[in-house]
Length: 345
Image: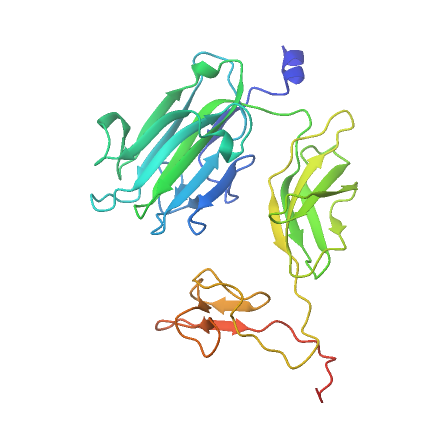
């Protein structure tokens, strides 16, 4: 029997996640935010069904769609199911626009693979039948996975919200976790980021792993370069200043390659200003509370301020807007200046 397990690439460890670890998302879980970037799934200690924490995503007055995706699961019994506890942070008939769908993918954990099959649609108590009502009291749901026997699947918890209320998930349990024979690297981190370099470090999937491929791309381009390395950490070089990169990694197990690690982003630093006069009119970035000029540094007690503002300006179409309440502050620092700029310029 042990030989069969090794060939299929999995062991008899079952899904059991209470979000107690301060590392979030947990190992091999994935968080994807496709609308409303300010309210992704996070770990919360304000609400919990058991223990001290749960998974939580807050409401968003602009609307949000958030996915929390399990590791790959192996369905090998007609009795396999997934169970979880869920609740809202509060409940009001005025704010009844938060919904939870439980979705399945039989291919991969890309969010586009989940929208074809809905296992369960849970709605506020004001808008749904009693069996699928969600309130501000913890309730357990259990969903049979017998239709997927013999398959490897992913389950997604998808929150959709339009100025509703916070959504909590806790104590998720289910079928066998898939354990690959060539595991991917974990906890891929970046450090010592400069204008053209960045150090990459990770935790190997196995203590015996000795070789990896680092794939990196300018964010949004989907054009990937790759570097082979046997050194952890390793340094990426010849990068472009003031550029956001995405990195993902694979373990090279000689006879096979692992799946990719989750994508990690980092941004190289800006070149210092090397010529005077220098001006910044705040006219080229667009406007809004999420807009802040490139290469500037924001130090503030209010995360969205200052920001580029379209209503009042001296010239052009934008200005930098500061606004703070009592006992709060906004600070904006310019990009760095090259100290070798001649004084007489």
